[in-house]
Length: 208
Image (cartoon, rainbow, N blue to C red; front, side, top):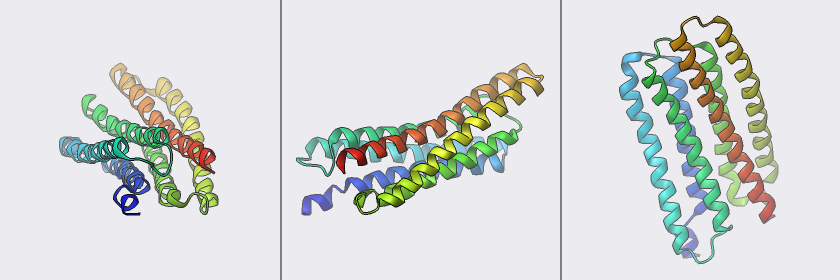
């Protein structure tokens, strides 16, 4: 029992997922109240979140190496931790690209994307909160996973519409190339959230 308290992997997953959600909330805030001159400081804030998530992931990996019998298979915990880490990295990548491309004005479609990302990561936090007792809380987990899948589908539709609008309306080639890449990155954030949900669903099915 003492060993279980020392290595609470479900709490580690929750902490890591909360960092992803914090990154999503920060991204939404940066682009909603956008100021070019604040990008350097906002990039530092985002990197602090991402770095904290990295430390959590490394801590889990170190514990898994020493753990005799984790609550679920090592491979499943590793896959879930790595997929959450990927989602956090991709969110940070959006802010870095906004800085690299010296974006002067945020397109409204980007704000729609950040709202979807924030909602998806919020659902995944609720999933992680229930994951420790997934047999008892299976219905609550499944509702959140369904919501994540729905949000990802909304993201797919938004991606098609915003890309079509971009190529029809944007006359500046540099802006077109920058926003094409940014919309790709935002859509990848949504895909990453769905991949986290997929891994969780797979873990639950394997261990039920």
